[in-house]
Length: 128
Image (cartoon, rainbow, N blue to C red; front, side, top):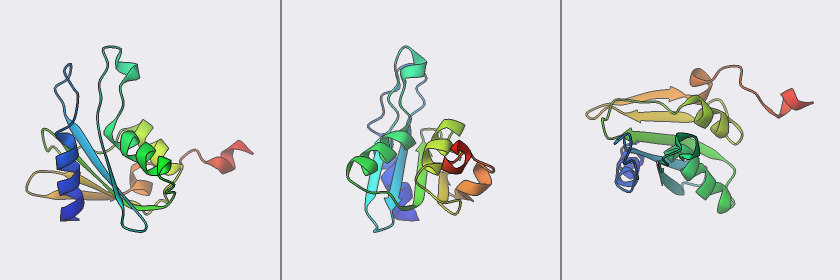
C-alpha cells in the first residue's frame, strides 16, 4: 500500500487549490495493477470544483478500466481524510464494497472498505 500512498502524495503536488489551499491527491489501482492518479482542481464557483478521486476515476474509465481494488487519498494536511460522499457514490458505480480505501495520516495509513464508508448505497438495482 506504500506505493499507492506515494502515488497519491505525488498527484497532490499538481493540485490547483488557490481558495482552500487544501491540496488532495488520489491514486486508484485497477484490478490489473494499473494506477491512475488525480488531484483536486478548485473553481471560484466551488460547485464546479473537481475532486481528486473523481479525476482519477475518470482517467481510469477513459482508459477502459472498470474494475478496481484500492484507492489511496493524501491531503496537504495528511489528516487521514476519507473521500467525500459524492466521491464515495461515484466509486460505488464501479467498485465493490470491499474496495480498499487508504487514507494518508503522515506516518500511518487509515484503511477502510468502501462498504464501511458508504453502507446502503444507491445502485443500479435501485433504479428498477
